[in-house]
Image (cartoon, rainbow over all chains, first blue to last red; front, side, top):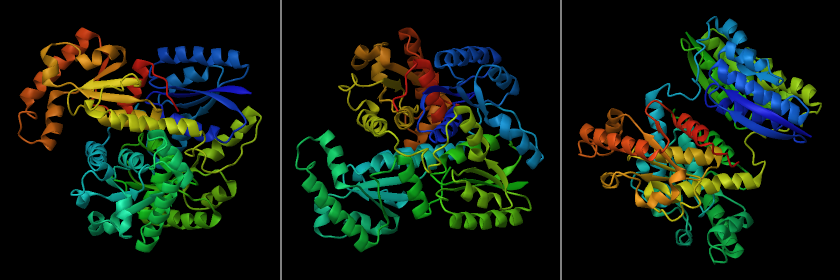
Length: 271
Length: 271
């Protein structure tokens, strides 16, 4: 069975999409064709949208699901006139919130992902630049400024996690790869010792690590399962001995890894 | 007036937070204290949560707003027993969706940001690595693989946009800085010419560019308003002459820039 799901917004559509995906993830048996349509911000575009909704209804032989975060009720009314099943987020929650807050909505468009606070926005961009400048142990002299230093074997997920922490939370995260040489003296590498309280370790199943490394350097010692097992074993031993909090990333997405790091470390978002 | 708003989830809390922020952005006059609480996945944690909600109610002298995306209705019921004003996303929409889809929800937790499709997830990570490897004109030999090549003056927002496009959409975006030397021959730089159809230009108000550059290299020629005006004027002239689609990023967040690029280019997400 196949159904079309539209995520429609007068802004970027990111909120409608996030909510829609969350709800649809509960219906695993149905094959959804997902379509995000941002910037539906006048009634003319809304009428065009209704045509697309009605075409999908005809093709699928079933009403498309329509998740919308459109602020303007005139535009929303046009969309609701189509053959879709409406999951109308602002229509459902805005009025009860107005009552509860005894305040009227400003009905202003595109607020969710606008730059509402320039200082906070710049901290996110600064955090992205910090992650890039302090990636892969490239420099260690800025670790004083870091909120967090991710450590782990090469290809255990440090860089994407640092970038996500910067973009989503404005957290300044550096990362440092633990190499074989580092493991020889069985303790925290010298460059990291003054910042031990900022360390968070990543680990990963050796089989998965070998697969990932093989994509970069096929059939090398670096990518061999033997080498991966050795590194991961020694690294986990070091984490436990040095009481560095750590997480096995194998089954987790970047979003989950990042959220768990925020919870475990108690770091506050900076945006 | 001050109100606490909780974003509570059995998963990462990213969806509850995105939706809550969207709705609260409509109430500009109220000063919200925003608290995200992920991983409330058993009734014991839910009872702890109720204490926090009730404490906030007492401190604020008003009910906190509670935006939740908890799948399990037993846990949700505990939360609803607190002194909060519930914006209960799954409670509101899941049942009507079950009816419409004639299918029951799997009531499985943490689906929104889980790795549901390993292939798609790896494409996102590959896209992040691609953005890093092809940042700032570092290499041009992989441009065949690129979905998009962002061009623009130094510090006009290319790198954070490429990383966001990778993380959010799985799009492989390279970026290439247009320098003064490139502008001398008044056309597309040689390395970019074979890929002209993949180019998208960023521009930015010269005053804003000078401010950003001054943070990196204060009082330099590079950061002077005169230099910024000159570069931006020539770059915009080149975009128009070469018919490269472009966007002024001054007033836009990374999310907005990225969404507008997706819409303008018609690129399809790869996740």
